[in-house]
Length: 154
Image: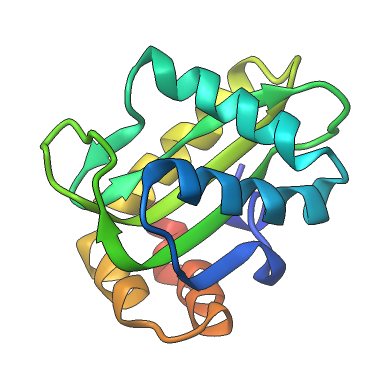
């Protein structure tokens, strides 16, 4: 599994203007609806339900909300670089400026975990994250994510 299989230029939002965790999840769900053809409300409820189990704010300004959905065939990642940092109840109590939302088929099993691990490794690459944070548009972020160094790090 690599980043190419999870993300496309159409699944990157930069900048995303939102004032709360709920609003971020709603906006990402709307983008996901366009990409995968599922109802945005159902997507939102799925990721919100997972979020209620514990925050997906993993620290260092990043959150990875995720969930499993019936009716999709492959794992999809929507990436948003937020216009302003927001509170996401992160493990380090710091605000979030970058969100990777992962949606997986209901029966994804180990592939869902592999996708989470892939994103987690990518997030630990400080140079890549610094580039993403300084990028001004989705095309630039996609180029950063898919350049060989980012793929090798992930």
